[in-house]
Length: 157
Image (cartoon, rainbow, N blue to C red; front, side, top):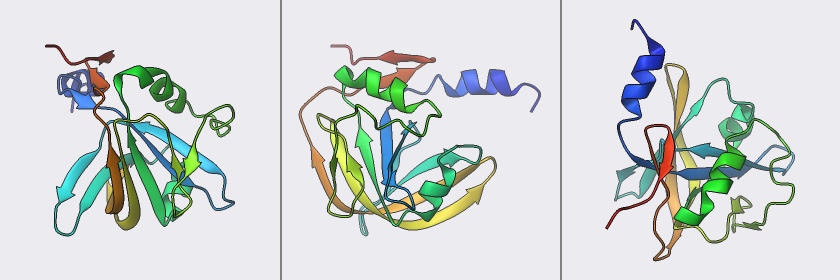
């Protein structure tokens, strides 16, 4: 690959939803990270996946988490996306959340939430692919927050 920056810009031509993936670290502290790499894998069993960079400050929390939540953001939650895109480990200070039955943070007001048990983790390039078995899910009728070309977007009519 000649130019990773150009490759990344080309990948940005694919519009995606935006999620904040949450878990509790080894000490029970909440962790959250913005990810647009969410995808469904299987309906039976219900499996989803997301990717985490090997250089992420929260990597050990997610690699060791037995449970996590994929919080799918709505249009009014761009601020949450930007907030959790930072590398700061005190990100949950001043952030409203509740805990799932399995102890992972659930963000209020999301478009959807998938409560997962870690099913498999695959080493792949400069990321890990984390596959979760969906244990519970909820959804709302809000509009999705989208990411395209390096910017947040909204659905058009």
